[in-house]
Amino acid sequence: MYFIQHIESITHQNSFQKENIWDELKPLTAENQLISPDYKNYIPVAALRRLSTILRMGITASKACQEKVPNEFDSISVGTALGCLTDTEKFLVTINTVSGDVLSPTAFIQSTHNTISGQISLDLKNHAYNMTHTQNALSFEVALKDGLLCIDEGKKSVLVGAADEAIPFLERLRGSLILTHLPFTSGATFAVLSGEKGNSIAFVQACEVYFSTKSQETLVTLINQFLDANNCSSGDLDLILEARSDFRFLAKNHISFTDYTGFYQSASAFALHMANDWLIGNADDKRILIVNNLESNKLGLTLINRNEVEA
Amino acid sequence: MSDLKENLKAQIIEQLNLEDLTPADIQDDAPLFGDQGLGLDSIDALEFIVLLDSNYGIKISDPNEGKEIFQSVNTLADYISKHQ
Image (cartoon, rainbow over the protein chains, first blue to last red):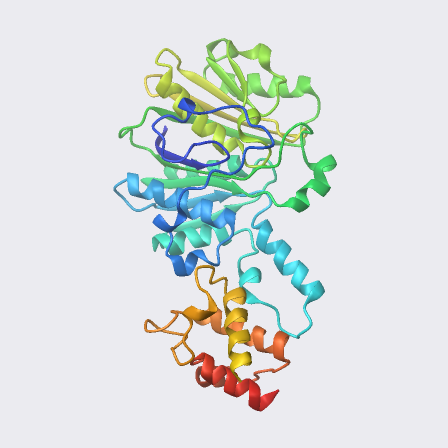
């Protein structure tokens, strides 16, 4: 079992360093801005000046996690769909417009997807396994599976998370990228998982990803097969957290997590935070399924159980 | 020369994202690198090379030269005035 020891999110919700994020969660509107903590409390000023939003969020959420657990992380697995967009855009624009022969190094250095996990390691002075996964809307689930495999290998304390940032240019891609009613948003969620129960409330029983899915009937079959493989059925689910609203009929409670996250492709990481804290606040509920169908041809499934439930 | 130094200070602040500083905070002879001055680092040294190239058309072919040139605003301004 993979116990959730601690989890932190920086999003457009008031979600950072909260006992239970549900105390203040509200459906988002386009007017909701990213709620940033005072990054100077976590990142030296000299370093902060160079860091874009996605790096500030990732490092700060990770450091807040590290402060809550006694041991250094034995692995760091990060998912990001679009990576460091601010620096990527800055670098590409500079290529097109700069008059000299040399380009500013900072944007180039920080434009790669693995800058997030690299900067987290540098900042924490952590020399353990470090990996970045980019699989569009399933980036977080793949990073999570990596973390679960690390625990299977015997690692004691693993950091898994995801981050993505919005830039104005994304509006030009709205038609091809997004569930149309959602605002573009930014967010980072990082969680510490361990094979030991500790002070956790819940554990990740299983996570699975499916690429190139087709019809909704196929998705229902995949969900039922996933639940069956994990010794439960849809009748056992107390809540479904879904990117869309296609599977309301599968459980007694259903929430579209994108109503609370807006659109960034690794938003399902925040759904993990929502699931963990839902179980903190709803003592009778035991099982939550996260259905990440943000992209119509991909499916991520993550089953979260209260600790008392037998896996 | 004093106009050049003031321009340089503004360009340094912009290029290096020194948001909390104003040109008046940077002394002409204060070290730019190390704990005694602005505390700039090796990436900033690369940014200086870009700044000289893009703003003044000066190319530094030998990176070792940078140690002397980038000591302070005074040394930077002196180098620019001699090589522009």
